[in-house]
Amino acid sequence: MVAEKKNFKYNDMDTLRSRVIVERDRVTSTASTDFPHNYPGIDLSWNFEKFKENFKIKINRLSKSEMEFDMIGIDAAIANAFRRILIAEVPTMAISNVFVMNNTSVVVDEVLAHRLGLVPILADPTKFDFKAKDETSTDLNTIVFRLNVKCKRNPQASPTETDPLKKYIHSSVYSGDLIWDPKGDQAERFKDSPIKPVHDDIVIAKLRPGQEIDVEVHCEKGLGQDHAKWSPVATATYRLLPEILINGEITGDAAIKFQSCFPKGVVDIVEGNGVKKAVVVNPRKDTVSREVLRHAEFENKVKLTRVRDHFIFTIESVGSIEPQDLLVQAVQVLMDKCAQVKRALQATLQSE
Image (cartoon, rainbow, N blue to C red):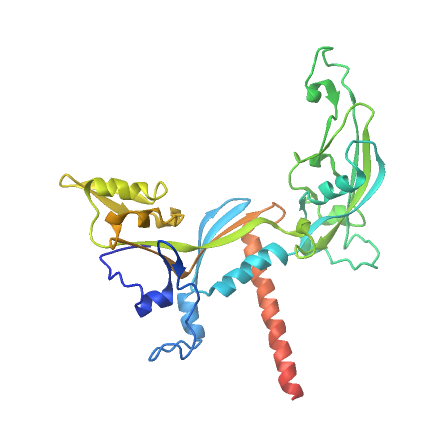
């Protein structure tokens, strides 16, 4: 967001209500103050129609594993709730139990089990049930993989070969070596999308001739709040939209210096009538380093703020669930939580 020729007071009501103020040595106005009766003459009571009018989601970048979108018109508490739900409360399938038949590698059983547990599994968690501790494994709550790899010398390799990948067969054990063992009617249910590791090239262990790994692993449905292996995201973060306000014009050599105070792409230099002028073109790229506030020549010429209700979200999926689906599922989890609180309140009121 860019603006020019503004009143540079930090204490006006609109700025205090809608912006986080970035000063040279501190950040102020960080807490939201938009609640009823806080500002005389301003109605800040909750209004659903007004919320629907102001709330927006805009997807800026989307790939198979990552999504960046803007969430506009909500409080930081709600934005943070989405972040926490994405990390800890959207269920996935992950390796929960490892049954070791034989392991003669240098990786001890406990470490091997831990490494296997962190391999993301491509399986739709909505088609499986949660498994209780005392519940029997079935095709409705468990996925079974088998891993049986033995290293041996490659008879086709040159006697002088030093590359283990060429000198030996199965010198490395990869996630792609996990073979799905369908149970019950799983083969029919998932014939269009066979269950497998998300990535085939994750190194689990390294072997040398005579060493072997033979294990059976069971995947169960779980939540990231119980263990990180069930978290569907590598990261889920947000930041407030930066805003750079310029008072008047910054020209000549000062414009070039002004540009150098920001990351590449934030400020551009345009030339008109032989005069170079600094223009803010993409404040989204700004890291709010405050470098520009260190220079006396820019005092009272620039103000840095962040828009309080404009969140730039980034979701990076581990691959088991696509990022756009993760957002929808996070919304559903929050809705379920709200419904649960509502039911509890209603029950409390009825009991009084």
